[in-house]
Amino acid sequence: MPILSVERVTKAFGGLAAVSNVSLDIIEGELVGLIGPNGAGKTTLFNLLTGIYVPDSGTINLSIDKQVIPLNGIRPHSICQKGLARTFQNIRLFKDLTVLENVLIAMNQNINYGLLTSFLHLPAYKREEEKLLHESIELLRIFDLDKKKDELARNLSYGEQRHLEIIRALATNPKLLLLDEPAAGMNPAETANLMDIIGWIREKFDLTILLIEHDMTLVMNICERIYVLDHGMLIASGTPDEVRTNKRVIEAYLGEDINNA
Image 1 (cartoon, rainbow, N blue to C red):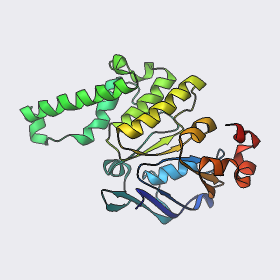
Image 2: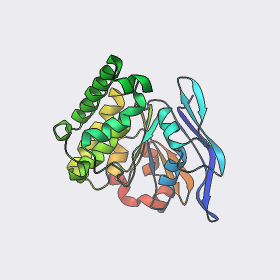
Image 3: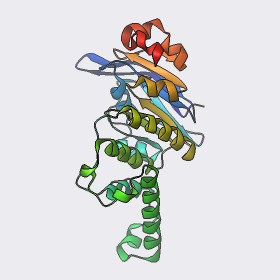
Image 4: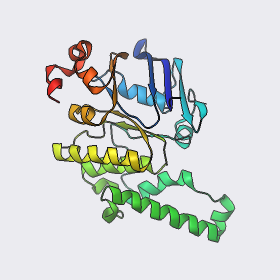
């Protein structure tokens, strides 16, 4: 059973279909790419998957621990609690909070104490807070940001802010992670490092990953399967080799240089 199943999903704005009759399946443990030209509907699809938009038609189902969870109409925070987390194309950190505080906020949905325990600062409260603090710092260490835990998020470099977005998503303890252009604005060395990190966190955290990305080197080197959107419609899917030689994909988006990626 796929961890994510999208069946004939459509979303229109003012009569213009941003996503039209799209179906896809993501199998647990996969690392899958979603590509297409600007305006193809990629981020709109992510917004549908995470509850920011509600589909006009079609169904979206998440399957966690053999339980099928319909996502249509569920609010974003509830979808996150069910095991689906994401990053954003435009960085959305709490920039006036510290690096550590950004991660701790995401960790809050994992707390195991009640209101009374928190109010009275009982021993269980202290133990849980220490546990969350330790786990947050360990996540920061993966991206070499633990030394900057007390800096304001706005003072990080662009690449570091991108990394902090991924860390914050990981802090929610997801089973399925959606990455919206994680390499945007990065130089080739940073992108190469990001490829290693994405592969490592998939194994470390037992994740399934769906990513949007324009950097074809990254997509072709780390994704096992790729879906291609154009004008809101799914025009191709398959392995990187199948996609790079697909005539419809070349015509719509990639160009001949995809064969050199």
